[in-house]
Image 1 (cartoon, rainbow, N blue to C red):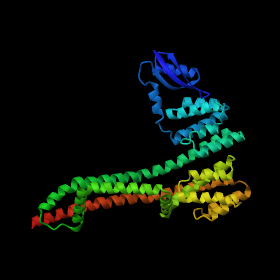
Image 2 (image 1 turned 90 degrees about the horizontal axis):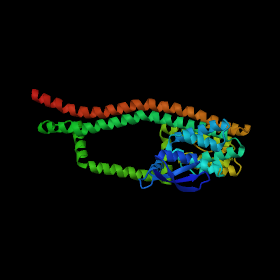
Image 3 (image 1 turned 180 degrees about the horizontal axis):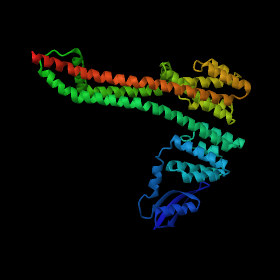
Image 4 (image 1 turned 120 degrees about the vertical axis):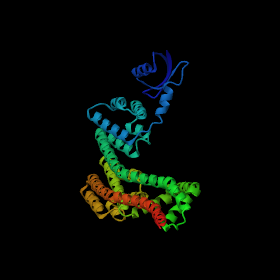
Amino acid sequence: MQFHYKAKKLSGEVIEGVLEADNRKLVVHKLQQMRVFPISIKEKGGGQGLSAEISLTSLRRVSKKDVTTFSRQMSDLLRAGLPLVRSLQVISQQTSNPRMVEIIRSLSSDVEGGMSFSDALAKHPKNFSSLYSSMTKAGETGGNLDQVMERLAAFLEAEQENRGKIISALTYPAFMIVVCVVVVIVLLTVVVPNFMVMFEESDIELPVTTQILLGFTHFLKMAWWAIIGGVGGGIFLLYNFIKSESGSLMFDKLKLQIPIIGEFIRKREISKFARTLGTLLANGVQILKSLSITESVISNQVLKKDIEQFQEDIKEGERLSTRMSESDLFPPVAVNMVSVGEETGNLETTLQRVADTFDKETDRLLKTMMTLIEPMMIVLMAVVVGFVVFAMIMPIFQISNSIGQ
């Protein structure tokens, strides 16, 4: 069979041609031997072939775990003495995510074509952040790219571990909320309507709790569409408000005021600030550039505005610790540690210690929140279900007593 192919050379040039082979896999193998990367392969007179498959790979998502694994593999291969391009080629053969393979091959092609590794990474901002490309640029300049990739891998692994802890901790409360909602829906749509028929046929005066429940059930039955529309519209408006600059700032300020949760968010953001800034400074990135990149990875708008002001003040010669002390977000322990780091000329290491300290604090607060949330969810579920059951049982006792009399 004959296959028409379109492929890309390592220099970036796109070529086309026809190859004879029994199947598409053999065509791919031949193209790889020719040291070109296939873009599309179509059987002459046939269907879409590999072109459809490759277009689908662009829909695949590159996860943070993929980037973390890539960073660790790059660090290991560069430390082993492999050249940069060869390291990229080896990793592309070991990666299972087709979209990530496509990106790594693009990086390899760009680097072999004369582009710097950091500039090649900057072409993929959705997958490699400004922090990532800036650190690799510093590593290229300092001739220690293998060490930079090691630090990047450690940084990403720490972030991934912290994110995993939070997701794991929130899984149980989320499950309990879903169960509670499902139970209430079943009670209101299946159980309560059956009891309503019995109550309507009796002449007894229903208790207040039963009247409230029946009224609420009747309201849901008659106006469910309005409720769904109202909730949906409210969520849409709230989402758009939070996405706006003023709304986002107001919402983030509000979150910081919530007991325990606000403290958790604050310490989590300080940890992220310290770890990101310390990692950048340790790799030779200039402090103003480091602060700019750190600002882009911080999610809380209140802290973002503080960091933005930090840059202006540091330009005028003010110390970082002095500016931090003027902010309401940074506790004295963080300010004092940074001040000592500035005095000893070891700011990057001190910032990493600040991050480690606040990581431990966030772990402690997370455990405290889970200790409080779990019983609160159980109590809430018991109150809601108990109210429905109580409202249904009381009239039944009244009916039984009236029959007995």
